[in-house]
Image (cartoon, rainbow, N blue to C red; front, side, top):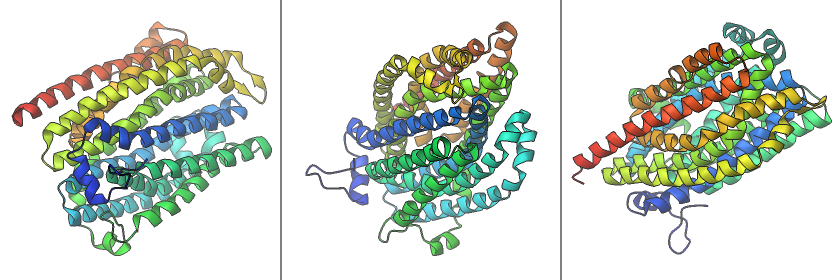
Length: 465
């Protein structure tokens, strides 16, 4: 679904910028967000299928994959934070009609990402030490060292894809990204199925399937980002000489980077704490999060669209429309999340049974652990849609230090301390982990919404509305 005019013609970059700052906000968010939401939903579905294939290899295998994927998310968060934060300034310049500055900012971002990628390459030989340093169970180290090395390489390659996705979102051309991502996920699924079910390989093959898929997507991304005549064109010469905006981009991005990395680190700490109930509990928590995540990732597509619209209208001086985008996003994401969570609850039992079945057969205890966590985890998905809308509103405004505080509070105030308390009060690990998820998600939503309401009132008062 691309951005099109009344006659169905695809809008140019200049035309979409005008549409973003003057068109109906509900239509804009739905138009941009719907392909992103569909992609996010299918992405989560494919993640579930991927985890299901890992569970075929056994309880320890799926728990190892879930654990190491938390580490990968920490690394990915660094790149995601830099891209997300930098795109705030890129979108502002784009919304203000500053074409040359838009291009300079994007090429500077590419330069920064290249430097980060070089540092990540040095981490590959240190994978066993990294797992040991975070107190990973020995069975995870034995099973997952090579898998971690492959996933670090895949994360580096995926950075270029993150930039491409965000650029297409800024252009309003999310339909093509949806198609390319779906094609990539189908390739990933086929490769993983071949490795696990046909060749009977280990979890390293799952990592290789991810690496191959990201590489294929990167070829498309590079071709698309280097297209001549685009405001968002990336070129080697521009990357080399684009240095003037580095401090500016890092200044606005570092809170997002720290926020995402700290959040992922916190989840890794939670996984380590969950392992105190047994290694299989890490897998149960990860599977519950994956199932409930189908609802939250679906609404994230609309929130992502809202963030770009907020930034572009702020750059154009239309602060009333920035607030309007937040209001529209709250309603849209709440409705789609409500529909999604109802469907997931209806499909809960067959999904959980599939996850708890390996080549050794159904693990009844593992299934019950997943189910008991999901009872509470799933209920909190609805409030998370409101929290997501608020976070993207603040992000679109460039309030990255506030989003840093909120995500840190979600993990280090409302999750880890709560789990520590529940571990002393509740002997059943699944119940304790499920309650932890519900309490932390609900608490952070209350805080985020209060801050957004205060911010919106100040903006409207300052703009004379």
